[in-house]
Image 1: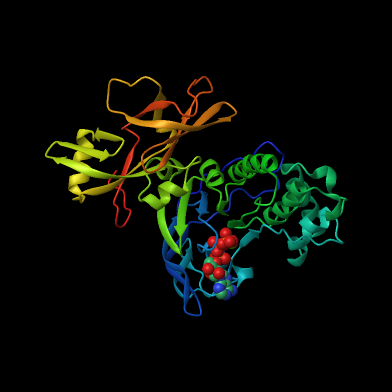
Image 2: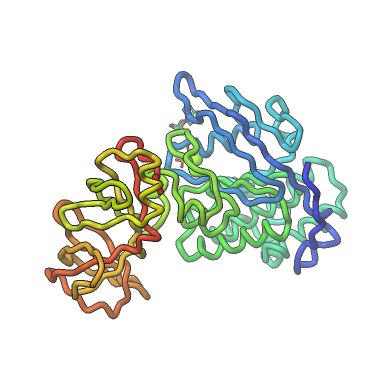
Length: 386
Ligand SMILES: Nc1ncnc2c1ncn2[C@@H]1O[C@H](COP(=O)(O)OP(=O)(O)OP(=O)(O)O)[C@@H](O)[C@H]1O
Ligand SMILES: [Mg+2]
């Protein structure tokens, strides 16, 4: 068990009510989930440090909710172990796990007031009336819904209902929060707002949080650590910056980042210290350490180059150094940025530039790759050489 640093519970006057951070290190060890013969979660290994905000990120059907349901005790673990600190919880009933879950459909009781919805888990535990009142009011203040306590759910907006569901989770003061796409159906503006709110709340309470999303921006902006899943398998575990800047394979690289990374299949030409990536539209040398990374991995004659739209510079004049020549296909103005789609011999790439860029569709243009930020992936299994 790690050392627990007492944290002051914020600026909302909850200090006297909250008993301070209650949290746990969550260890998922070689966990599998089968539905019949189908493996929905395969050899999953994750350790969520005490008090951390962990996001499980992946597309629909990759096994996120199955993992959450095994953590909550709503689904049997087919094989492997889950520990909360040193306690193996595989056979522990859901009510004994000290976990609070918030789902996308927040399942409020329609005939109960906001106060009673939030108070419900405390009533089930036969908490005394005075403590219920204190905790519900403190949670409502923290979530800024204290003026709504007498309303019924049908008198609330989507975002307010979501806060009530979160309030119901936090009054229990669980060891672990499990949030499964809690804001997925809210509109974009409210989602952006709730992202900040939930992050802030987790910091205030200090409780370990596992937060499921298929939205990479949500994971990148909120989490301390991200577990990227695909087809039931963990692809990569890391900080948002590690996942974004150093994806371990082409799948992660393509899933994370918007606009998405460009991929170009190239020949690997040359040997010794001088190796370049050659394509019908360019021939660009690797940096010296990249030659070592590629040869150390014994790349075959072909490789997939990956470069994000903001790691390309676009110009109408041919630059001095190595560049990619193409033709402007279309320009899209995205608020403060411009996205230019450039046609190459066999594909198109997208480049992020400024709205001042004057190139027009049909014109020849030249792209310079920021080689500190490009990636090379294996054409067979997709792993990253760098
Ligand atoms: N009760 C079940 N019986 C059979 N198969 C199931 C069951 N629940 C989930 N699955 C399957 O297991 C896989 C993983 O499902 P899961 O709900 O964990 O995905 P998810 O990542 O949460 O997806 P989404 O983003 O759509 O919620 C899917 O292929 C799904 O069809
Ligand atoms: Mg799900």
